[in-house]
Image 1 (tube, rainbow, N blue to C red):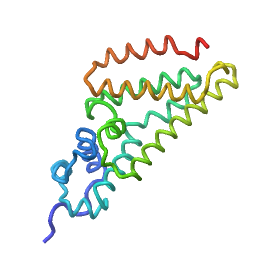
Image 2 (image 1 turned 45 degrees about the horizontal axis):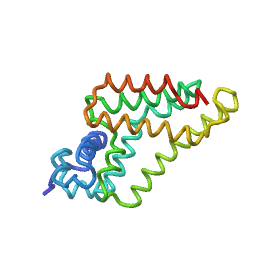
Image 3 (image 1 turned 135 degrees about the horizontal axis):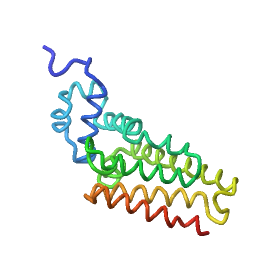
Length: 198
């Protein structure tokens, strides 16, 4: 007798359902019962398809990167550096306040609330965020070479500043601050970027 859904299930549906659970409850707070209820798969099917809860979470993180956080590559291609920063921050707000997903950022929430994330997965999340920061730093250096950004500021510091703003916006959205207020924060930040006055 076959128990649960056969292996022919839709990966996109399962990953989207699991993503919501991990996002709302964190890695530690998510149980197999939660995942079964959300995905319709019994534990045997989940383990057969993803190897473990950690394996499923790893796939969810990759799914999140390609879908919810899919605005990042396009933002990094903007013409001017300040346009890059604006596109990143506006992308954070769109993703963090999208009614189709929980508020905030899956990765920020998971990093802050889940001590039980396996070390390899935690390392992977750090590497992903470091990769984004490195890309922002590279765009900042390009802007400095073109005279668009003052050489008196640190490209790495500028990138870190941008990510801190991004994380703060995501955390604020998660706490329930209205989209209008978040957009006002962006305008205030962009109107007084520290590197514009260096």
